[in-house]
Length: 360
Image (tube, rainbow, N blue to C red):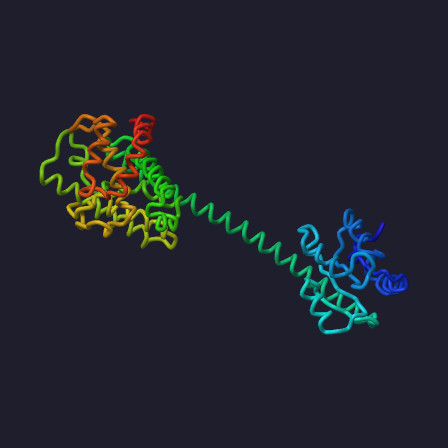
């Protein structure tokens, strides 16, 4: 058995004298396997992984160039540093060896002290490389852990705020949960059909779906007498209710200004501020039209209106899934983005199933 504390070298040379000299020179500092051929090298590699390989070039059977090519092509051995020790002294030979992946090229005859120093330097580099890889691996784990903690905190903030809206707006029930699921279906189908997919693929899908829960956050600024009125709102009350879109943006902006990690709220502002805009420009709060309306708001508009239609309210009975679908389709080009309505029609059965599964 070799001493575990010493680095392990494999010296490969078909010349027995060279093997004897090499092992004599290096054995004081390293555990040296003196191997007469490439075949023996690969045989030993099955059981022992060296810290470094010293490789001759001119050998019968498989030469050094062929040997290193095989080593570098195998993931198990590719990172083992290889130093060529050869009687070939031309610049072309040295270039070929280094080009194939050797870390160094030493010509025979060599000075023992120089050989030892070069081996020492390369083993030091290898240890530093391994240390850096461990550091990077630990750093990645730490970043992932912190990212998970941050996302958990974001989720908690948004979920609690969304629940606050649901507690105050007693007529909407599980509206937030359903619209989130409608939204997910729409986005997945848009990507599959390559409709607006260039833009959607730039989104952080976790944050998009999480932030969608805050599309009605502005309702916390609406009085209970209007929010939970058991009947149809007057014109004046409707105007007050409409302010919830802009107030939602203002609430989210306050959160952004009070913390250093609220960049994830940008999606929430888009949902809150634009889900009542209409394709023809007749919506609120800004009267945006067509592609002026952010895609997030255009998608949420369909999810939000569908759920309002299919749900019972104090001022109306619930529409059936078929009736709700027809109303959405009738709003093509006026209320809704025509491309999105086309996607919605493919998903009408999915929307109906979500409405049943997550009914109030």
